[in-house]
Image 1 (cartoon, one colour):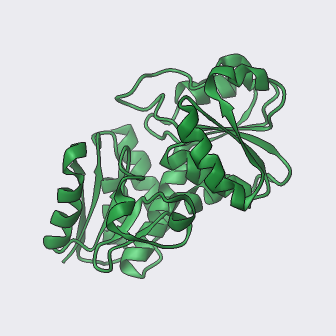
Image 2 (cartoon, rainbow, N blue to C red; image 1 turned 60 degrees about the horizontal axis):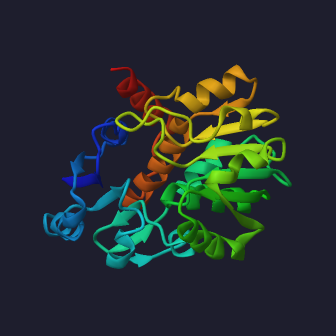
Length: 269
């Protein structure tokens, strides 16, 4: 039997178990995907405990995506941004499928030459920024803690034009950005239900993408729709990053529609 899991703190909001278990069933794989809430001081125990219990792989979510890099060999995008959301526990290799998830979510939008503001310099923020840079955008990375934001920008500058902007001065960018991405937990179920940026900043923005998927209609998404912006829901990133992780663990390309339907059903329940 194939054992897979998710570690994070918290994880109650996650629909990944419903999504991944639906993919396992559809693919005819005898396996199970479980979510585990792990306290920060128990992260190492959780990773190596899962390996000892013969789990094949783990997904990693808030707040551990940057912490688990010390336990694994980094491959691909994970090595570029030192952020891991998928682990092959057999080989102890860390991957970042969030970058793939962002690109798939934004597919169909011509982002070449666009100016994109990414709010948040954590794991999701670095993944979104790298994806946008590789899609041809100029990225402005805004973060509350300047040192963390600058560190992320130094890492990302190898892959395109990326600058840091203090979150406290983000209103100065009004009318100067084409794309806005929220890569903070603000608006997520269980976190503060508030906007990551002032509402006025949305004036003139073409596209708004919120990486938060639970709820689907976050305060940012609702405000963006009210102001006439095109929106991309976080569920799209979730589904596509999950599909890529599934392929890494099993060698099988899952049915993305099966995963999306299961995720949406879980969100509605």
